[in-house]
Image (tube, rainbow, N blue to C red; front, side):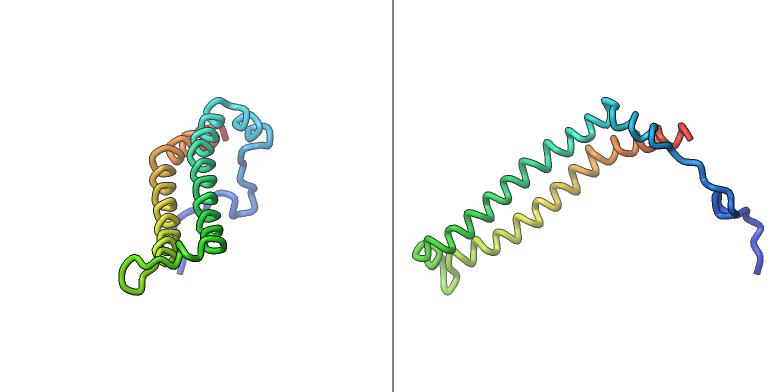
Length: 121
């Protein structure tokens, strides 16, 4: 079986030209890249710190506040179980928030940088 299509660039022994190290360095120094990095950091760092603090609070309460954690909320469900399940819920919530943030704020900026680099080839 043969095809009429030409082989993709770079597959027939010819190297595919791409951005150079200098191109990457100039993009890294650009205001556009700094804005992308700032947008990522302003979202990721505060949420990471908040989640670690929330997790450590749960661990400390489990270790040192056994009476409080053993308090029954309803039936056989106690505070420890509710807070433990809340850990899972917040993990999924943060993942969803990050995906939404990345899709609306990070990806368009990254795509613009990528397009500019590919156009310079």
